[in-house]
Length: 199
Ligand code: GRF
Image (cartoon, rainbow, N blue to C red; front, side, top):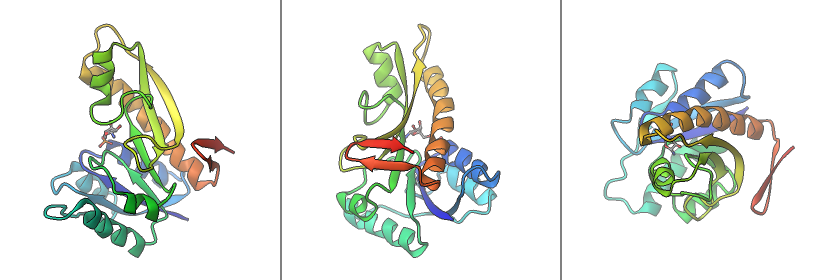
């Protein structure tokens, strides 16, 4: 069974839908651990309610690489094979990317490559696009630049606020993130350069 490690910084709603799909037998995987860089992340509590090992790793005083070494140590100790960034608000180091080449996924609230980085929903509103969406991708050395696995468009409505748009995008995130993990767990994702083929 595929072993997952999930990294969070906050409420962990994407993490939770993945936990629930695994519990229902929809994804052939198990969660080895949930790690947060924020001590008060609500997602830690939610993961523990599902009897998942979930803990805080303190980044304070550590360089990016040293912190990532700590995370990678914890992941490897538990034989984690696929890492899921689920609202993890840190950029990960090239060291981490190399240790888990094409085995780290991220969910982003825009149709990449549009609006990478923070506040993808706000960027879409400010730009005035009519369609935005959600993207699941593998993580490479850049910020939100890795091979795209799945995308889902979401219309921007005239009366949208950052909140209403985020809510609508989140619904799609909750569909495509578990699906991408399921496809990976079933061995159905093939990465060829920048392109991801679904088998
Ligand atoms: C989501 O919007 C995701 O796209 C972004 O951070 C947010 C995390 O939400 N990377 P949650 O913690 O999964 O509820």
